[in-house]
Amino acid sequence: MTDFFQFEADFVDSLRCIPMQVRCKLDTCGIKLKLPDWNQMTTDERQALVELPCTTETEIQSYREHIEQLVIQRTGVPAKKLPIEPHPAWLDSATVPASLQEKAQEIGVTLTQQNWATLTPLQRFALIKLSQPGHENKNFPRAIAEFHLL
Image 1 (cartoon, helix red, strand yellow):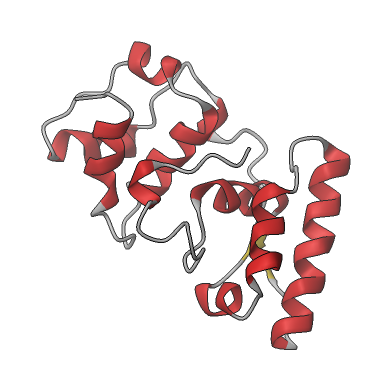
Image 2 (image 1 turned 180 degrees about the vertical axis):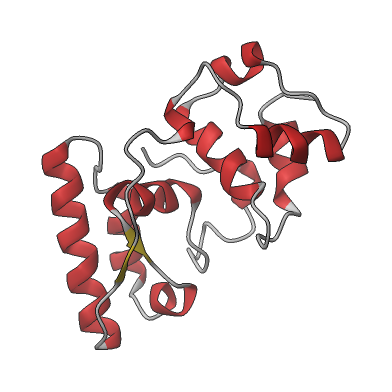
């Protein structure tokens, strides 16, 4: 999975920000990675985090160990761990999260279950992340448009 979203186009060439596909892998393996820590990694290290698989239990464990080693090497401080959601909302194609529905309605969009079901898990993950309070939300309307939800 090395496809980037169009709303990420302003930073994917340099990987100066953490792309959604890496954010999804981090949530999947239970690691909190701060942008300053990401920026201490080399471009090759960042690219490897984009390309490494993180789907099966073995891949998830391997990814976790790899990122933990990288963070310690680059920062000298262990990576912060996050609780792993046993049933993440982005994998549930049957239920649009209420908080996401509310955020969509703020920009005049109603997300139907049918719309939600047509999205990929990574698209659903991106919408959930972009709709969270405290997140820079300028990309939320861009993602809604990119995913043809208008």
